[in-house]
Amino acid sequence: MLVREGRAAAAAWVEEQAAGDPRFQGAFFSGSTPAMPANGVLPATSDVDVVVVLAGAQAPPKPGKFGYGGVLLEVTYLPLAALSVADDVAASHYLAPSFSGDHVISDPTGLLGRLRDHIAPPFGHPDAVRVRCDDVLGTMADRLRTLDPAAAWHEQVTAWMFPTSLTTVLVLVAGLRPPTVRLRYLAAREVLRPQGRDDLYQALLGLLGCADADRQAVQRHLDELASTFDLAATVGRTPLFCSTDITPAARPIAIDGSQRLIDDGDHREAVFWIIATLARCQQILAVDASPAQRRAGELTFRAAVTDLLGLSDAAGLAGRRAALWGLLPDLRQAAAALTPA
Image (tube, rainbow, N blue to C red; front, side, top):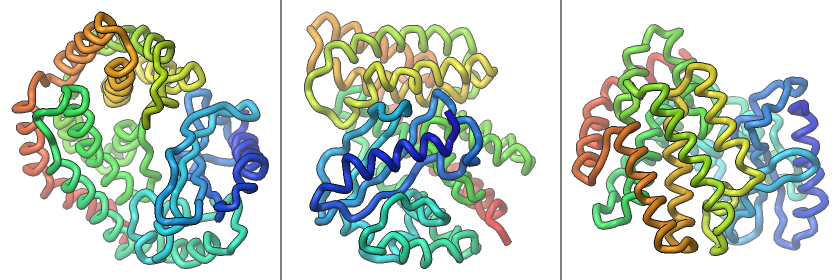
């Protein structure tokens, strides 16, 4: 399937399934597909991210991932209130890219077009890029301050790992690349290496803990993830934020996508999403699996985090957080060097 065909399927879903909602205010593309060439091949390991804007101050839970028209969509609801101040949208590292070009799907009120007209012209200006970089740093700091050592281990690791991975997003935002999720480490490497900053990239992998990860170990834990994924997809009944990420339809992204990275020699870059997906599986097993299945899942998750990230307790997470604070000056300097003059 071509990228333009995937986008067309997404637009058809919006028209057929979302536009009839009386709360509907518009929809736009997000994620990595807006940056893909229209006539390029949409990878089987990619979904098409769609944001549906609904009237009100709060949005209902997202539909998440599902198949439609031969493509895997990931649909998120966004409250209209989140788009009420154009300068705030322009400052958002994850919202602004959707208004940097022609990424609007449906715009019945004209609001999304006005946001695009406000954000797109100065999007690449150094001042605008610095504002979005500051947003990344602020988000990172806020989330790392809230680590709870009393939480379940998979919750602790998730709460630490995602803000830690924003170090790569800072690089992407500074380099005018889309702030992707699953492939953020690979994308950051593609930005840093041409700048002669492989040392910084190694440091980012070191913060995560996988700079020296062995390919065979990563493969072994991906194989364990595949079994855990299938179990969680089978037993999961309770609606959770991550539920639609752990389904047969989403399996090509989590499992096949990670396998592709390993096969390409990018096993270290696969670690982030392997651990993230294992944690999501564990969330499901914790509420819907039998005691024996839960315990087996916990052991699988702990083994992966120990082997691939070198972490086993809250003290280790705190140490990594301190190391990140120590790397921030170099990160800021690198982001400044990447920012267009």
